[in-house]
Amino acid sequence: MTSSDTLSDMEKVLSRFGVFGRYHAQFMFFSFMAFASNSVFCGNFLFAAEEVGYRCKDENFGNDLCRSQNSSVEYCTEWIYDNPDSFVAEFGLACQEWKRTLVGTIHSFGYMVGLLLVGPMSDRLGRKLSIVITGMLGGIFGVARSFSMNYWLYIILEFLEAAIGDICSPMFVLTIEIVSSKNRLLFYILSTFGYTFGGILLSGSAYAFPYWRTFLRVVYAPALLFFFYLFVIDESPRWLLIKGKKEEAVAILEKAAKLNKIKLDKAVLEKLETEKEKDIEFVRLLKVTFRSKTLLKRFFICIIWWSTSTFVNYGLTINSVSLQGNKYINYALICIMDIPANIIILLALNRFKKKYSLIASFLVGAILCLSQPFMPTNLSWLSLVLYMAGKLMSSFYFSITYIYTSELFPTYTRNSMHALSSSLGRIGSIIAPQTPLLMHYWSGLPSFVFGSTSLFAGLITFLVPDTGADSLPDTVCEAEAVGKTDLNMKTPPINFVIPKNENFAKL
Image (cartoon, rainbow, N blue to C red; front, side, top):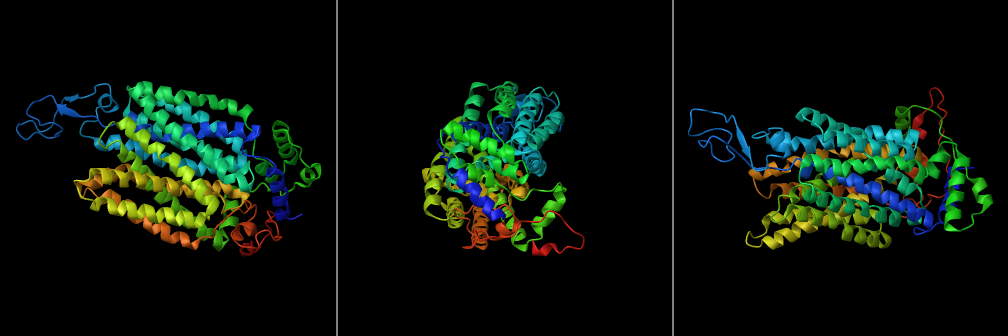
């Protein structure tokens, strides 16, 4: 039996399930909560390590000046902070703004490194177990951080939490693998409303618990409940099949059918087979994938997508707390923009192809960002509208990038390739916290940079195929055929038995 036949059989089974059936509705809730926690983990530093005003106790020093201009004493020895209970005050970070902004950069760097660990772990240990491990570790390190009495200990814990406490990557892959191709987009989009909920929850918690230590404990402690995901969610049937665990995969499908009160064709379930992955090292699996010039090109394009998405989306979000008005409301409003963004994405991708939707969102986002700095200064409302619209577009292409990337690579390295693309693309989120510094040169420079990167990403998207409603590819051959009319033609399954002197290029 070919793997294409297998995909057809799996699709026949999964297509029997609706998105709103009892089984998938329950799973959607748990996925929703996992994405919400990720949103909280990624954005809490904006409030925990918020900017605080300070002045030197010596009146000869001007406000916020780090060097005296009217005294023989060159450096201030004692500072008075506007909020003495703040992160900045407790760690004595006056005149060390780089240490405050470093928190966000370290989180993004840890996230980048962690994706290189979490992706392979998910492909090896399974999506479900990886979700539980990362979810709980994120909560443990987050709570531990709230007890830090030393700045550098806090930074180390911030890195560890981001590196091995990322629940998002394995949860995302499980979310798209547990439904059929025709329901994949709708199911994913509905689940990702959790990001918006998490952002609103984050701003509300920061408002209700202004002391940063209490705030961290409140938002991280619930993550320990991810332990119960061992009992409330199931493993991916696709992953189980690729691991040769057919009986477990069938049992999950039958359980889902029972909850949804539908009857599955026993003959189709019996036919479910796939080429079992042999126990070979992760690096060799990647080599098999990268031997394909087609997949290698896609990989580099995915890195550009991710770098642009994280840079622009996080950059606009980070700068939102500096906008005029209430910072908690501003942050919540920026997060709420993801709701219309997801609805529009859902409607657009059901009508138009992913490729051209992604190109359009990149290019429109570029136009909005590039035009914002040149708006008349007396029309501040227009500048704000363009800012919000630019954030809307960045939400468009970030969401599309997330699901598009996973459809371009084969099952046995899907999570790894998705995580690797996301990880290397996190250079954008590492740089994003530093973008406000560009305003010292020109107030419109951050927006101009955001627009330029979006423009480049949009143009390079012309080089990839559209996946449409194609089934998720299991092998390199199927992945190379994505977007072609003959995708469902029979193709030889990938051979994991690697003989000596074998020419891998043919894979």
